[in-house]
Image (tube, rainbow, N blue to C red; front, side):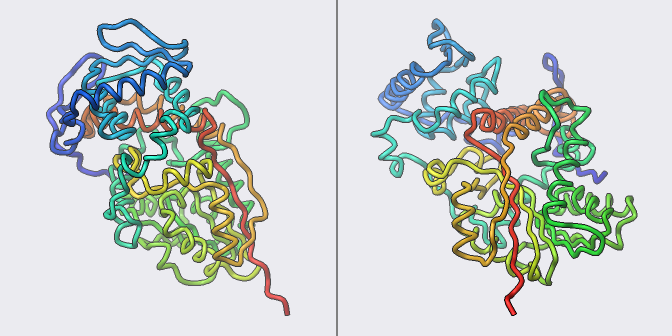
Length: 428
């Protein structure tokens, strides 16, 4: 495995897990509570109280009694800071408050699932209409231009191969698996990931002699399985860390003659291929560049070719509301990212390409289980994460990210699809 030098950090024991001091320079908006006047905090508290009163949640503010309709418990340890963050930064502040340890939940996924299920009506309609005034806008620095994409991808995928290896299975697959039954078991995750990959390769018709373009290498498992079928694979990635490890794995498997892994933006791809496969890549493209992404699939496919995609999706109305808003996920996890809707995918393909969507299958419950296994593994290996130099704020960030994502799928707010797109032979 490719090792990276972790940031230096003094470590000590604190309770159950090894911890390292917070890197205050890295987390300025978490370490410092934003200034908020008493009226802002009071209005925020009032709006939250009315919203939470309608939900199957229990809330305990420090020094107060538990209120709510029942269900998962949220414990707010520092109400003043909590209301200041939510009142000035909305959902970004909600996430930052968790990172700062100002609130917690014994069943974090359960609490976030309730909130995700009611995402559309948490904010009163009159405030929704003023969204453009209070919601933060996406920064131009996170646009997914060719240079911007390299920076955005590096911020997440180049964190550390060792970090990802701590909570992913042996295939190092960082996308939804496909299980045979629930509840899923960790010992079956690698098999479920290979099942997912094989379904995509089957959709794309990958076999002996297939010229395959993969957009988004990950750590190489799909390229390896395609090469084992006899395909000739060209795989594109913007992550130097992923490419280094994927190349090691390809060499160890004896497929160096069948797999080429290029540090290359999808817009720079050249050549013609019988098949294209792209797994959970479109979420990093950005709405501005969805037409270019699908045009690339069209241009790279030979007549009669097939493209198999795996894509996370969200309801169209929520996507439209979120597409220009800067979110917690974009700020701390996936800069520049945006999850499309099935409607957006269909409209973009129809309007900007000659491709046809000939199959679509959703399996969001499988992603919820995949995320649960990752989240539990990450929690179990907290000491190892700390030993790599990642501080307590980072670990709370990733705990929240994995739980937040799982809740999205458990509530039905998010789904994941496998698509088949086909390119017709020209009529002669």
